[in-house]
Structures are given as C-alpha cells and as structure tokens.
Length: 224
Image 1 (cartoon, one colour):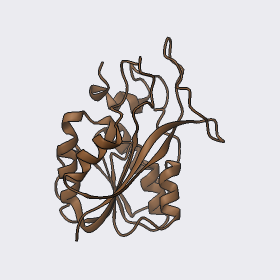
Image 2 (tube, one colour):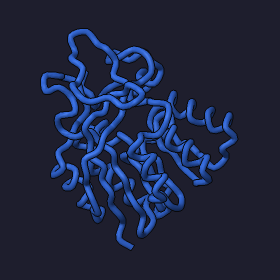
Image 3 (cartoon, rainbow, N blue to C red):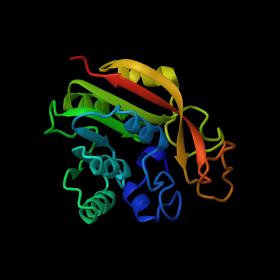
Image 4 (cartoon, rainbow, N blue to C red):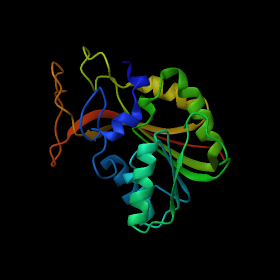
C-alpha cells in the first residue's frame, strides 16, 4: 500500500495495516515546534488547523482563547476532536469533515493557518490543489506555518513512508501562492511503532522518549 492511499480512518481507529495502536504522530499535545510558536505569540486571529487529526493543536489554541476551525478527512478523528472539545467546554473549536485539497466556504476567513504534519501525508500531485484551497481560505496578510518531514527522516530502504521534502520542493510548492518568510530545520516528535523488519530511524529522542524526526518549519504569509 502506498503511503498516500493509506486508510486514514483505520489508522485513527488503531487497526491500520501499517501499524497497530494509536497513530505514532498523535503525541497527546501540539508538536513542540508549534507550541513554541504559540508561546512566542506568532499565532493571531482566527485559526485554521489544516488536517487536524485528533486536534490537540486546535484544542490547545482554543483553550488559550483562539477561535479555531479544524478540517480533517477522517470521520473517526473528527468525532474524537468534537467529543474532546465538548468535554473541555471549548465552544470556540469547530471541526469539519472535508478534503483539505478541495474544501470551500471559508474564503478570506483565517488569519493564521497551521499545517501540523499534513503536507507530507498528501500525494505529491495533490499539493497544488491543497495550496490553492488554503490560500483561498486565508485573509489578506494571513500567516501560514507548515511542519513537514525533511528528506532523510525515514530509512531510505523503507518502501512505505511519507512524502518527505527537500527545502527546494517545499519552497516551490508553497511559493507559487504564498510569500515565503523562512524555511528552517526543525523536528517532528513521534512515537515510533516497532514493526517487523523495519529499522527504527537513528535519530535522537526527546525527554519523553519520543523520536525527533528531521523536519522543516516553513513560515509564509499572504500578501495584504
């Protein structure tokens, strides 16, 4: 099975063909790179969490008073996100089940758009449609962040893996629409499942034992 046609709903249910148990990218909190942006005051206005998954990022932002919309393809993740928001009393977090490459109805609405490990999950041929969709949903002057796996994050011999990017690939895809401010090395923290005959990437681990996968953090904006 190619990574881009993974059964995402089964992945969120914990019975994927690729791994068993919780998705490794679900670490129970926002990615540290993005939590740092929030702490530094880089997030403003109404926020789109693109491909929100279980929505720990959305929920953390909503708990700080932001109005957040999470868009996610898989019904299992959307249902879990809605339930979590209800349990936490976060009425300012809304979740929509839709395809991030073709969603509509939010033209010019969002001041901040955050892609927390979505970009590399899309088929390469869907990148342009994704950029057009989120660009249309962005308000003039909006900020756009992408946290994405860099080339070399996974072992070269691994047949099924995300669509890792080079900096040039990332700049080319995003720069067609957005004004890029910065692309810098970063990390994606993940709980790596132990799979038969699959080597664990030889990367450092954080203080919680999660592996730190090489990534890029892109910052861009929509010209006012």
